[in-house]
Image (cartoon, rainbow, N blue to C red; front, side, top):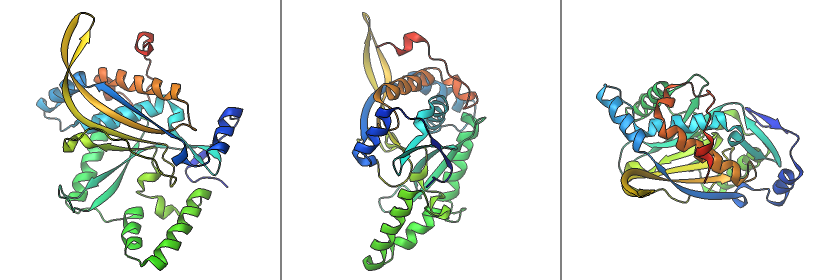
Length: 288
């Protein structure tokens, strides 16, 4: 059976296919990497943009940078379903937004499509419009956001077998399109900006449901003293936690992708270019 909004990846190496057979479930196959990324140049860039009157946030920049990496590192957009590898037709980044900054405030899933010609400006506007619309109740709940409210209120005797049936449909790639809409588990990757609430990044699991092969958390940006050669300097550092399905690509591929992410953050003007533009990381940037 096929998978909606994705194409089958064929001609896998023997090791790649056997790894899927040995570990058929995503929750058995994810690896976790925690890295400190230097945000100094990006923070200065965002401050400059705000002085120019542009309403751009660090989270907008994070999403844009991740989108550029996904365009340049295509395996990141793959996922495993029913023991086959597929590639998403589009790059979509999902996250959860609270309607209000209160403990019991309602949460809604938001999907951010990253088009080939998108850049920081267009992505920032899309996210801001979406979040503002949700908090001002301008958008009607649709898709998975609406279905969750309905399913969650059903009694156990009905809800449990129904959810089980939906999980089976998901595994076979035949979940109704209405339940894939606004469903962050059907994104290319899921992100969570924990730094916005003053937290560090966390170790977060993946799920067997959906088609997301990675989950990225960003912590709070803090000043840290860094030693370079015989000099000490204070840099703005953010810890990132990345959970990734190792059946999609190996650790070598993931680490090179994280190095590309750091290179883009070091050169934030690149965020103004098309998301799909090829990024060439100088060789010295890939050396340990």
